[in-house]
Length: 462
Image (cartoon, rainbow, N blue to C red; front, top):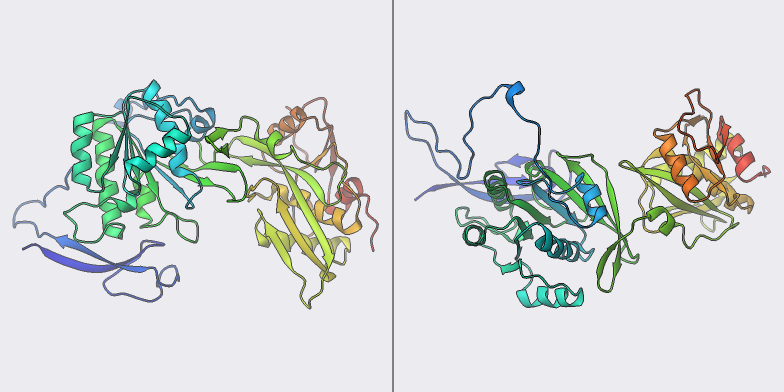
């Protein structure tokens, strides 16, 4: 009988320990140490240990002799999906797609599978959570029909490999990796050791056969992929499908890509018959904008190489509590606290008596500091009850002393604003060359927040 070894692995950071803890000693999270049982096989004396199944045997090569060509990519007839992947699917790559339950992961992949089956070859969709009848019902709702799209409801990895050998698909979908198990590991499906072992074997399958593999992963309450952190290191690409459950828009974001740029974003809209790509997301996010409304400012944020125009809405109201509230939606609360402190200390607005609410329209989540100035102008606009000019776009990072800092890729941001009809841009004063600035867009350069408010809302200190 093979010997087994029990250890405890943190599902948040991957920390391993021979004994369990209520709180992970590495990351400090509670109730994340899960038991893992794995077999231990001692190598025979005088001989090297057995190589793991599926491991590719290679020989050393000179760097100058290795080709950097990844081969011809598989084109997906969805431009937003191609953008996120860096131009298409690389044969033999393994990709991980994560997202909140119900955000549309299975819907998006089923649509992509149907299109790929018509253009690149056979696709095998393996589901461990839904029956074939349930998937067929979804396909009928989305009006999907394809003779080269095969459905399989199986969770045993050995059986999945047998079907892969018989069908020989070009694309393999595993929905989801947490339901798949291998009989060589005694732990239950979804455990750390099972997820790691199954993902490693699927990686070897992709690299040895040239099959492109998509893995669907569950997401924890913190928004990270469930299971060991090593799962994200095994795959070539990590994608997150994000979106507010009450909004129709979904953002497909690349956080890791060995064959393209990271932080690329594709925008989709969830409709009754499936996902529809949004070719001009900036126009879609500003479609319902109310002109000359106090507390509204337009910012330009960069998502990868794509500039997006978003509407930043702010609302200030006299507080009814001892401590005024700061409520952000779509921005980091620390950025909101910083903007309110700068406006209070450097400009003189009495925000310590005001509740402040910030909202990014369309369900977007903005993280870069280039939207600081737009947030500050929106807060001041709501406070003095004066509208920001409708033809003004605002770009800039705010420092602690109220000074404005230049942001990267300014020409790309301004060109996107000019395409949507904006005539003026409020930007930090910079010594950099102004090459690439659209000629029909007037630049208004300011040094600090006070000068920006004089242009944006013409506020009077109270």
